[in-house]
Length: 220
Image (cartoon, rainbow, N blue to C red; front, top):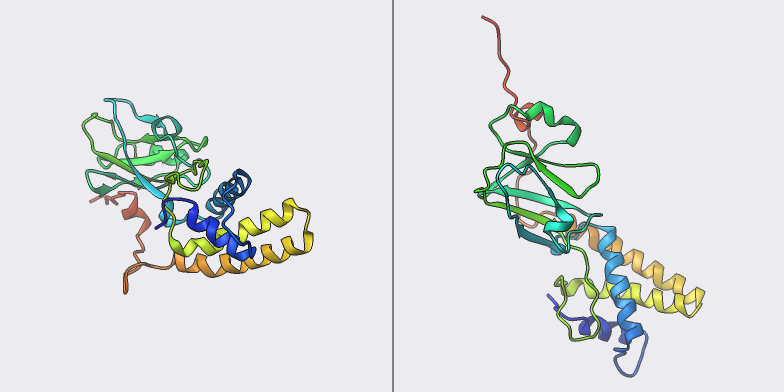
């Protein structure tokens, strides 16, 4: 994983056949723009972070942009755990169906930032939120990144920076070719990101009624 922009800037300068690495504010601005764009096109596993939610007794809803400074409204939540046990999500308009359940469920309101829980919060729960983080711009080539980036993403990011540079100079033909190269690289790397990371990991398909804690009763 890389923790500064320098490896990306070096790769970009090599692609542009520059004699030295460009670390100017303009090039760093393009790099920030490229990373932010790439984060927006896919829910990359490496951009997930964990937040230990601070709870207040009987407070059922929490505004995620207040609780988490870098919460991505666009990409949202990955998973939530209570004391190490995964909590099942339920649609906001279907919370009544689980309101009487002893199990804890969570929902996200239509504003995409308000997180709620269906079972009364005691305030002593250990709630961990795995969420997708928003990018924080850096001002120079040596500042620590808010999200560590895999080395395998350097090529993809450099290609998009190359596109931004050519587009900024109105070099339309070069910009188009750089964008085509970027899209080809993106189409290659997304299936790798989406694939299972454990060999022979079974796919789990839940029965919907069991998933929601529904129990059938019969008249005798």
